[in-house]
Length: 146
View 1 (cartoon, helix red, strand yellow):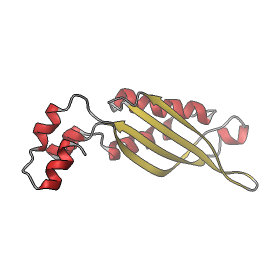
View 2 (cartoon, one colour; view 1 turned 90 degrees about the vertical axis):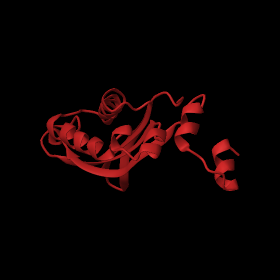
View 3 (spheres, one colour; view 1 turned 180 degrees about the vertical axis):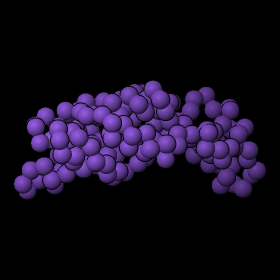
View 4 (spheres, one colour; view 1 turned 135 degrees about the horizontal axis):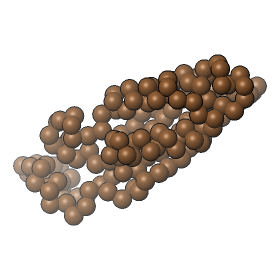
């Protein structure tokens, strides 16, 4: 049991900010976005370059949410609404041939522009083949160490 868990369990008064600043390292927390459906031009075949397809995107974004947990300030965390807005814009304005390239692009945006330490990006095309519900790719980038 951690010091914080012990103090909360025992009913002792705890100042979360004090424990946060004493911690020798921060833990990795996850912000997630599941099953985001977006329409985009993606693919290598001529039809895929002209007819938008629906893709399904799920993200796990590794970061510390400890400061936001204390401050209750959106500026101290990764704003998932901003992530969704940015990805909608990216997919409306760019074409990718492969899901692998799109996944790398999404990971790079989250790591570089949103300050994520680690990401898992899952992207799937829906109904691409008869009898197959989804085909896709899952990648992990960054480091899981806080």
